[in-house]
Amino acid sequence: MIDPRGLDRLDISLGQIRRIIRDFELEMERGLSGQKSSLKMIPTYVSRPTGKEIGKFIALDLGGTHFRVLELTLKGAGRALEPKIMKFALAKKHITGSAEMFFGFIADCVKVFLKKYKLESADELDLGFTFSFPVKQAGLAGGSLVCWTKDFNVRGVIGNDVVELLRAALAKKDIRNVKIAALANDTVGTLVAKSYRDRNCDVGVIIGTGTNACYPEARLGGMIINVEWGDFDKLKLTAYDRKLDKKSDNPGRQIMEKAVSGMYLGRIASLVVKDLLGLKPKLKTEDMSAIEGDHSAGLAKTASALKKVGIAKCTSEERRQVKNICETVSGRGARISAACIAAIIKRMDTNLSRRHTVAIDGSVYEKHPTFAKNMKSCLKEIFGSKSNRIKITLAKDGSGRGAAIIAAVAASR
Ligand code: BGC
Image (cartoon, rainbow, N blue to C red):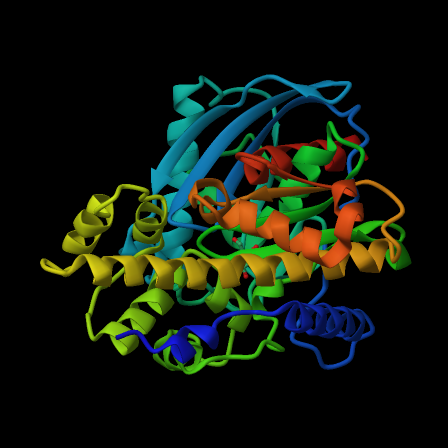
């Protein structure tokens, strides 16, 4: 029989949500004023676009299991043509090998893209480089990697300028007409892409393999700050979180990411299932989506999802409980994310007197059946009827499009 206390420990009351908001606000302030904080609050040297930028730009979008190259033509007045996109898979050997091999592979992909779209001998192309890891930026087109996240571990990159590494790799492959005009985090790309059309957009969020957010900071004249919220460590942890953290590649780091993002939700749910039901599935976050979206009477989809992850036989009661566990784990992630969004909005607008659009991209937000809904209902609990001033919207492929727009802003300077 399920131990209800086991699951209770993962529930987050409104009181706890308010505490998270307060702690997050304090950590943001500490990070901005150079005090010790789990929030890096990195200045990005990017401001929101005017919507008037025009021209043809290319972008590299790197930060998850897939890497994309795209070309975007901006028409001004907030309009753009549908981008040309090529997607490449990053193998384990690329993300855990040497810097030379990693950036060499990326440069090869750029070459394939230029060839396919007959851009090899085009005039100089400005490129926006989305690199979705914590980077201490020295300016708009340069910055050194602070640490890897999301199980990436390429040797020889930490402490080095990732733009320089890419530039050298492009030169080595004889790609001469591409100029790296800007470096951006994926949250910044997402915010910029949405605010090109929507002037109320002032929060960019990613909830995918990893998680993070950014917003324009009034104290810095509206410059966008990359919060790096995945490293936020003022959350009440359970024994499951501690176990997951201990076994991870980066113990003690990315504590919030480990409670929220797609890389980890399945691992937590598996630990809870093992503890409470004695079953040992190896759930991925996609499996949780299938299970939580299963509304059939006998939970047939849950049975096949469990079969896929090593549980060939289970009772219908066990399936019901597994579904309940998945809902609790993903629901917690959604509520934590909503609390942190609320803290960012409160920093910009204490009384919620304006409208705010929150642009969100990432597989968990996009594909999980209830994550988005749970986030919205948590914001309603926090702000009451004023929550209708907050529009949360999917910004599909925002990070790549945004990088091209950032390159446009840089080029127009
Ligand atoms: C990285 C962030 C990134 C986020 C979403 C995190 O692991 O530290 O820089 O924005 O993942 O991709």
